[in-house]
Length: 225
Ligand SMILES: C[S@@+](CC[C@H](N)C(=O)[O-])C[C@H]1O[C@@H](n2cnc3c(N)ncnc32)[C@H](O)[C@@H]1O
Image (tube, rainbow, N blue to C red; front, side, top):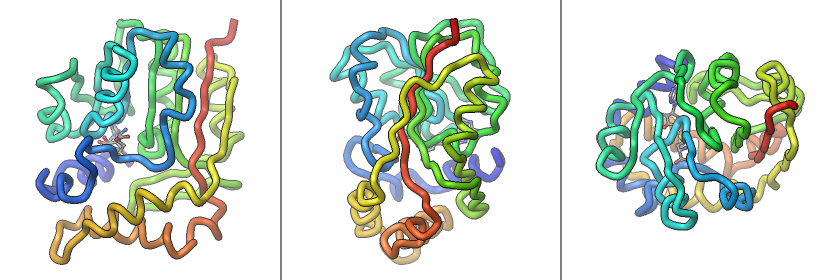
C-alpha cells in the first residue's frame, strides 16, 4: 500500500495541488476540528500523514501547539519545513523515542498499515484518528485506500494498548463541500494523481460511497490504565 500512496502524493507538481486545494492546503473532508476540546489540553503533537501542513498551521495558530509533521512525501516535507519540525518517513515502519501529548492521523491511516499504532504505542497517551469508516472493510486500490470498520479501528487500538473513548460518524453530506470545491478546480490535462482525485470526488458527489456505506469518522483513544 505504501509505495502506491507515496506515488499518489509525490509525483504531482505542487502547482497542481495549489490550484486544487484551498489557500491553507487542507487535504481532508468533514471537520478534523470536531474534537477540538482535545487540543486545549495538549502541547506537543505528532501529525502522521500531515499533507502540506493544513491542520498543523491551524493547531499552531489557534491553540499554539508544538506540532511535528510526518509524511512520506519529500514534496510535502519541503513545503512545510520552514514552519514546523518535520520527519520524512514511512509510517508503516516509523518508530521514535520521543513522547508526544497527542498523535494524529487525519485521513492518512487509510493509507497506512495496522502495525503503525503498535509502533507508536509507547510515544503517547492519546491518539486521534479522522478517517473513513464503513460497515465492512473496503479496499479502493486506485486510491491506495483501505476503509476500515468501527470494529477494526477498535481492535487496532486495543491491540496497541488504547481504548476508544469517542467515535463519531459524520453524515455523508459532509463530504460534499470539499468534493465540489476540489472538483471545480480540476482542469483538463492534469497529472494522473489529480485524475484519480477527480474520480474519487465524482464518486462522492454521485453517491457511490453512500451506496457503499462509507462515511468520515472521528475517533479519540486513550492509553489503557
Ligand atoms: C489525504 S492526505 C491528508 C493530509 C493531511 N492530513 C491533511 O489533512 O491535509 C494523506 C496523507 O498521508 C500521507 N501518507 C500516506 N501514506 C503514508 C505513509 N505510509 N507514511 C507516511 N505518510 C503517508 C500522504 O503523503 C499524505 O500526506
